Amino acid sequence: MSCLVTYPGRILHGVAPIDHKQLAERRFLALLEDSALPLPDEVEYGTACVRFLWLDRRVAVVVDLEEFGETDAHGGYTREGITA
Image 1 (spheres, rainbow, N blue to C red):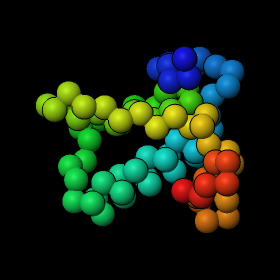
Image 2: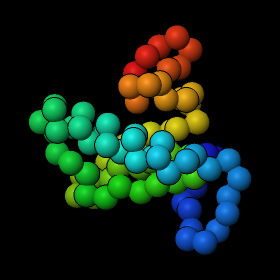
Image 3: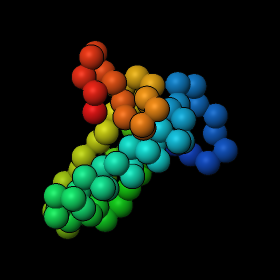
Image 4: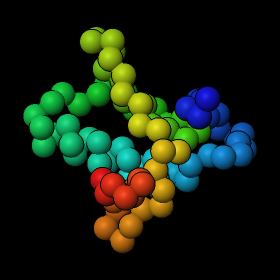
């Protein structure tokens, strides 16, 4: 499972860099705002994912960072020829 909860001071192998997590968070929040959708109540960083939680609606969106390659010069990700 790639989306485990991280703990302060604990070194985990295979952890996505924090800048990838922050970029994914910013881009997803921007997508929600641009679409006039409600922002999540909480955002959690896992080992290789970012989780967005809407507590009152009991909804979660998990962005799995292992599915994506490196970021390009514009901050986008490429995945098997598909640019996001």
